[in-house]
Length: 483
Image (cartoon, rainbow, N blue to C red; front, side, top):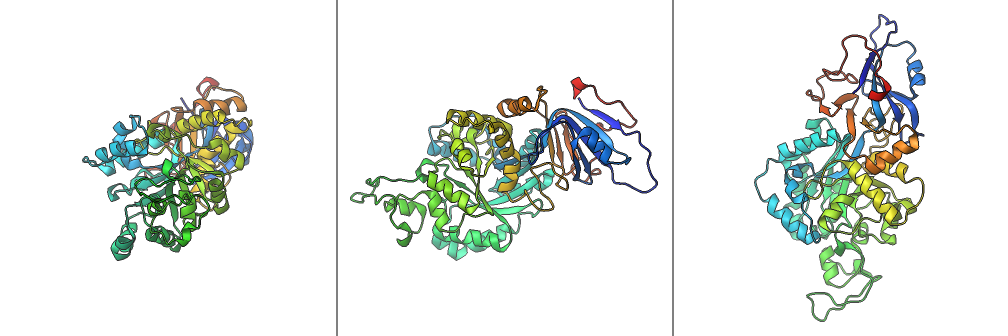
């Protein structure tokens, strides 16, 4: 339950934008220490003040405001840094368990070939995301019918148009022109980008040109990398399967001087460089790019990502369903690599709740020997500020991922019982799935007590809770047990 309180302060004759104070037992700004009995004041879709509740109210200096007291912990809205919302209707695939990437891909392709209403299924995925406390999404879109899902749902983030299965000749003949035409259909609200699918599904020519197309337009890049085991580095000299008499030349050879047409051709010739080294040589990686999965990465691969400013969205539950190894999350953390959290789609994951992946990452990190006491804080940061950073949305006038003055008012509230900050963070990270009770996007309450607002963005003033949650007269503050 929530409490709604109309402040009993005098009003003035001049028009003042509506202010809402969102208060909770614990507020976690991400770029400042957690706050007990904290609050966030929101006006016109922006964060006005963050701090202890009494201080926030004092800063309003007599201006009228509406207060909502939420139970549990208030965080920045979650950022799902890798998913495919249009595959929400393919959950039957995601409920399976597979023996590896090829095994899963066969099941995926069979279901993908069936009739689907991609727009409706993407809309359902957007609704599930909102219910999970997600306010921004890196959505990889394969069919144009689903390309407006984020804009239609009023979610933040970026829609990445996926590009795959182009060989060099076809790309040069008509592929580039086709992708440019398709890119015109990707809405720039909330954001647009391109997703070169993976180094094994595109030849060299498109992998060289797609980053240029994006960078000429100030857009973003996102690709799958290090997800399949055959993308990993091969260091031993070995025969090449299917090519009698060809011996692998192993790690360290100058494969880039061999004029290979594709990653698969490079491997067929026996070169052992990783997919990460391959795309880096082609200029794909950079601060305007983030990758998904990053499972099969060596120390050198991870160092390349850091050197290029490229973040990785970890999707551990998807990896487990497909039958892959867990990501090296402990190494990423120890080395200071920028990480984010993604659910992938329901075609390879049980839900679109990033907190379930946070819990999985916690378990994996501990199993991999990460013993530092900062694990809870760093994984929560990965699911919020880390995702914003991965998409280039952590800075600028529309910055998200943290609770700070001037940032966009994207908030998520989680029902946790713990009364102390350390216990609350532990509860969120180790058992936070399914606990989102409220989601605020751009100052609008989109979900309250698990109920999705009927009106879409534009149907009410920023910062104002949707009917029937607004009190029409002054009420008392909710008691502690309902907070």
